[in-house]
Length: 135
Image (cartoon, rainbow, N blue to C red; front, side, top):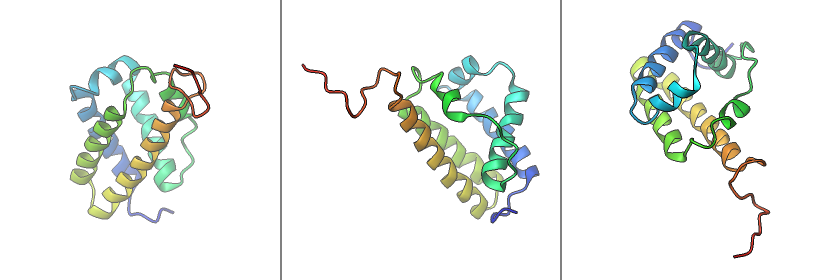
């Protein structure tokens, strides 16, 4: 049982509503259009993800870090900020304040974690903490 008053039905409404906004967004829409081939399947996976994260359902079996690393060459911190801004707006419009805030807080932590994984990936172009190239 969740400590928030968020239901599966809330997530089933929230996630498609949110990704409609993402897909229509001038900055994020093209990134998602190039990354997602099957939107109904992807939305179902995202509902499973948020159900697992917020309700403890355990339904999500994916790996978000590798999924995002595949697009690391085009993802920027500003894009994560934009995603979070849209998430804040849609959760606030869709859910009661406490539940929206819980989802916003969790999303910010997840975004920070994904961004760190992308910026410091071992096979990426971003220099890691031990990179000591000479000038």
